[in-house]
Image (tube, rainbow, N blue to C red; front, side):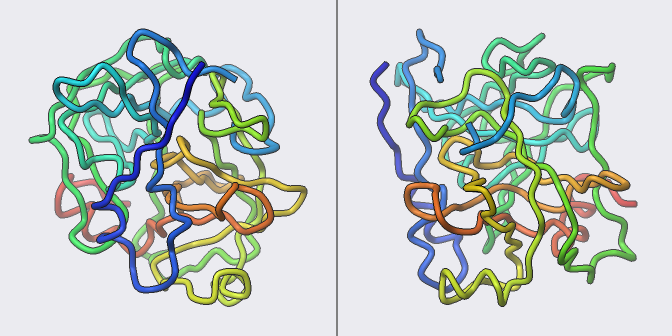
Length: 262
């Protein structure tokens, strides 16, 4: 299948200061008639129901027969959290309830008047039709407000998505990787500068997020909660830490728009 990359220029404006030309603002596109084939680089296939909170996004532009791909996390029956650079378009198809991301149990098309993007960082919300929860479709908790200053350094977490694999294709079946959160100072040794609102995970054993994973979740192993939104990776998705927007820094913003707080 022929794949090509779309750069969302708006994502660069949302990116904080620093040499972040490696952000996953470049999202793979596929034709509407075809499914993306082929992962999170060096991840493992998820068992059914491992991440019932993840959704697959087809990111559509009116009048086009192709779509970019990304991810998101269910945080309430009618809200999905994602990256802002996934929302610079006309609508999204949200696929729920299956590890086969583009063949979900059901889907909703949501127009851009239901998108809310943060004004200066890469995090966004989608107001969705009401979705009932079951063992395959469920929300993930956000951190509590008394954790908003926690940096979660050295914490183990899991990131999942349908993005680029080490063979250059997109994943059709959900891939996950277990990773350790590192300090921003360690992350900056690779990138030179990292925003306080960014969070990084170590690239041990070649684990990395990649294009098409954007907007997806980083969830702690213990007391599972959504601590990061996938937003960037090193060029080529090998050899450097993976980057996320730190959700603890936006708990107030999320509460103000959705009413969700812990």
